Image (cartoon, rainbow, N blue to C red; front, side, top):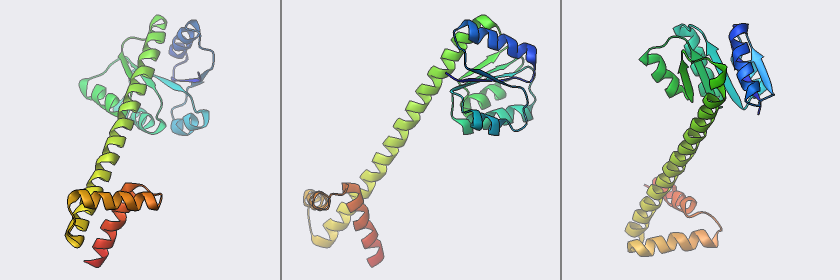
Length: 190
């Protein structure tokens, strides 16, 4: 697993790297400079990102949250001080582990596992949500197409559905594609 350690302070980065090495991780890349961080992370393409910000100001946190939103990797963030708004912003941005005043090498492995697990859970939930939204949208189009066919051809709901299904099968297309064609044609003709 390729791990990026983002920390402008070498002594604190040493603690993280030592904890990672003790946990058996070897592919560790340190990034000390905060400017151009997004580009460097994109080039490096790490599997996990550990960010240590001793006393971050609001601008630095915003940059880190932007990285979290765009990079789409498990992220653990260590800070010495925080408030509820920073914690909420970090979680909203997708930071999987937001650790306040807890930078100890013995904790790195567990924190890394937490960030990865939360990221995987969040990603799975997002995929399920997108699939559900897509299925709902398809269902709405099919229902609309059935209504158009029922009105135009004097069919029952079952007959309209059967016609859509038969057409989809004969054209080797998805039912929702045929339904969208019916809706589009009806919109053009009205």
